[in-house]
Amino acid sequence: MSYKIVVAGATGNVGREMLNILEERGFPVQEIAVLASRRSIGTEVSFGDKTLKTQDIATFDFAGWDMALFAIGSDATKEYAPKAAAAGCVVIDNSSLYRYDPDVPLIVPEVNADAIHDYAKKNIIANPNCSTAQMVVALKPLHDRARIKRVVVSTYQSVSGAGKDGMDELWDQTKAVYNPTTDVPPNKFTKQIAFNVIPHIDVFMEDGTTKEEWKMVAETKKIVDPSIKVTATCVRVPVFVGHSEAINIEFEEFLDEDEARDILREAPGIMVIDKRENGGYVTPVECAGDYATFISRIRQDSTIENGLNLWCVSDNLRKGAALNAVQIAEVLGNKVLQKG
Image 1 (tube, rainbow, N blue to C red):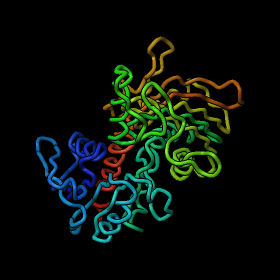
Image 2: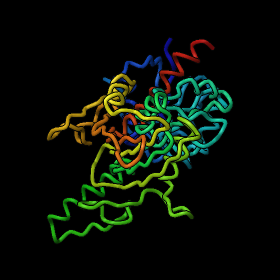
Image 3: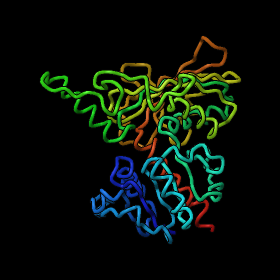
Image 4: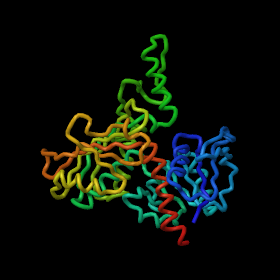
């Protein structure tokens, strides 16, 4: 069975990546439409060997279309997702707008694919935050074996998580470091990002955490288990693509590092590269363009009774956004719509 697919936000980093991944994975597309804001009407984007022209999302009729992959931010999603859903088109939304809505499933297919059956309440499915997506892929198989009590995570997030403007700012500031006559002050970020790290992603909340850190807590509970305690520190680093995470996990019962390594090797969506030698681990440079979530540096934490440490790296534009959305579409097509 093939489907009529809409990609909204097709001119952005994530939208273009959605188109690439739909084609790479051979998604059964009967017809495809690419949408953007009015200022981008007519912009050409690629889908396999085809060149598509974007249409105006404000005037597009979603009736008769099966699924719409949204990568347009919360404000625009708030306006257009209900219109698409009301027209019978299932929305798979990459923004944060619906992630915490109890009537909208928040899906990472390797972790909680069965939750997709709840989509019909609003005809909307939420895609998680990029930093959460890769972490829960690693946590779920370990949680199934030894029950996770608490997670302490520090993230090292690439500038592509802030969109094209973030990538441009890193590029321009990096060039300016070597050209003393050029000054590129912070605009997208709160401080210089070139040759620097910034412990601040999204807005600050009353308790001193940032919204990005809060997202990791709330989303992990919704996707994996509400009983898991999570504390996060999210940091922007001068990397173009690929988020990294240092994750400390406390379990209810003992889990040996060798068994954990074997469990992760067998888990869907994970690639374990863990050699205790120079270069025996994965960094963002190696993960860019790949589907997998890479796990390295698996080791016992001797400071607590049942603890493990690990290093987790993934392409945030792929698993953290576009790939996960396409995987949701695959689950929707395979498990739900073809039976409807």
